[in-house]
Image (cartoon, rainbow, N blue to C red):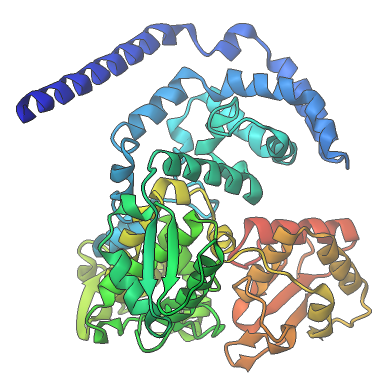
Length: 566
């Protein structure tokens, strides 16, 4: 009977593959006709539509865009789903978008998986989120036009999506699932929750009870959940604190998450340590091996954090930028080192800004000494690295690879264990639609930022509190949405966490360090820049309020690493 069953399943799979091949052959036969948009010759119509959307973007009435929604939907149907794009996307996902089990067991992101060959880290997700996107070179010219159109009119597009009742993955805008860079955080989050609901619906099981004593919550929760399968963990949890009569109607589960979030960072378990830069965010402890069960615990922590996201519960836990990037499968940057190891970061800046021969650094090789589990070894940063000299021509690559190795090399086993647990609950392709700053907000929620308290605890350098640019700055910050204020706080401090005692207790690398605004006398065509170790914003002397607000908003939205660009 088992053999007959296997034969039947094999036959079904073969039939599915045959149908797929027939569909692709049909596409190939019709490809010679060219994209439908070219056949209809509607270029001028879309140009006019773009002009109208530009006008609507400045309209304060968010409902005004709905008058053009049918035309925008038609544009997406015509340009966004052309056959060459659809075929490339399906072929790419044929072996990666099958069962939920396969997605959950997908390999760890490049930031960990490729540490032994770190040069491959240059590929992978970008800073803009949407790690599932195809490269633009993989797309047809027509599809590229569509993506550029979506980028240009993203404000209006997001207004339409907020008011749409059709799930993103089912309607005319479904192609944006693979280009989430053009989507605002709240629109991404809505799509994300819709996809999690689908997973939950397809995985209906009995509720799981977690029986724990309050004094041993971490260890007993670990024992309860470690033995569960990924499918079981997608079920509803309810908590029973032994010796207490409370019935869990949701409140005990929230309390359990709060306790676990504190215990994750309990020094007794040696799993995480605070970053030297801000003393608020956490990174994996490279000496966690002193705990014999550390890798099992890291997998458990990954499961708990993913389960909290799955259950739409917020955790009071904040990690370094590099740690969020590991979860998203994005390569870490040497800019991320500023908060994790400021001395190393400064040494890398020195290397980049000076001639290697003049400063006596012409004897470097593409290697790094790494200590892992108490053992020290020299690893190549790229194949044959010990035989490759660092020169002025390749030093940028050296800095990139060295920083990536430093932020993963000694903790790659810990990161991999965490990710194995995390992806048990949330598929990697789904979480990768977010940026590292958005992931923090997804885990910890939007903070309540008191602008008056921040203003009362701000120091000025070469500016006065009455300077015109400072007046404009506070006016702009007050005009920001809650999400934009959170992005600003991440931009200047490295995290969206607000100190419990208020901004008077804001921490920097040297202890309490108030928020600072420094005058930047360079070009006013530069973006504002930040130094998160010192909670410092460098603000150019912009000529108008509108320019200051525009440049500040662009910096916090598009340049989350905190460095201004010309």
